[in-house]
Image (cartoon, rainbow, N blue to C red; front, side, top):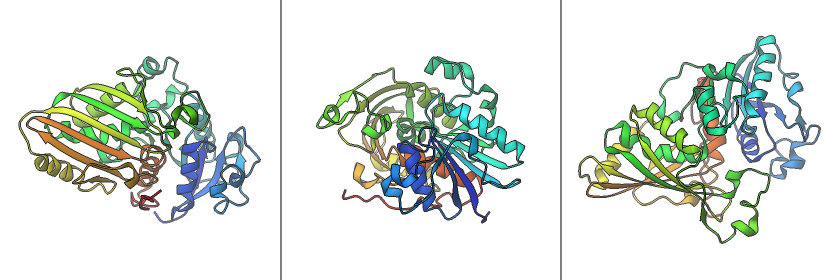
Length: 353
């Protein structure tokens, strides 16, 4: 497919929404048709995101009700959602219903948690509320592009940013039968992972020069990580996860520890990971330990490996807003439309910021 694809972004005024707008502006096939923000409707994108003013000098935010006004009947539509958890599914349902009325060919990728679980009961168990659009659950698959060669649904629920970094480190261990089925994961995230609206935990005076754990062993990404490891490897793995808030804006750094089934050298494990990700251009197995600045603002994940006897340590570094959300979503959208998976995503990290 080479024709331009009209593109809509729901929840476009937040950090992930802004990243989607940035990536779409440089994409060779996707063309922004509507950026949705109910609270900012009528305001220009450039006024809200000055960094994007040259990309969208006149375009304004719209309401959900008007997103398809510029899309003709029988056209193709790429629908991204960066709306908050529990709000995203309802907004997607509204747009999909309108799209059916116009006979549009639609693929949707959701960056919220609304389509990360296969059942409404699993969603309620984690988030404590009824699923806002249970009729759509069987139309979505949740997985990383690196861990699903084919899918049989028209839409995708993208894993969370912590889950993305953890899964890229964990899945080869279990899919290739290297490790015992218990894994200990420590992860540090930047403040953008908490969203654009300030809270006590993300306010700069609290975060600057500070580091602290939160929700140890009970973070809501734990069941998501365990379920997606199981889906990708057919292994039931006990996940012990401790997230931390870091004193920087962007990036996630994961340190994973597990016991190997047999003694292996770091080179041996590294080769297994390299073989596993051989056809996946955004997962790079590096010889040293990864560094955040080498991946921040890019769609790449760097993975490092160390062993001592049967003990293995896997480290992974990603940008939480790109590979962990907007960039991973674009990877999926590229695949859904049979575009090169790397389209619009190959820019390197700035590194020296």
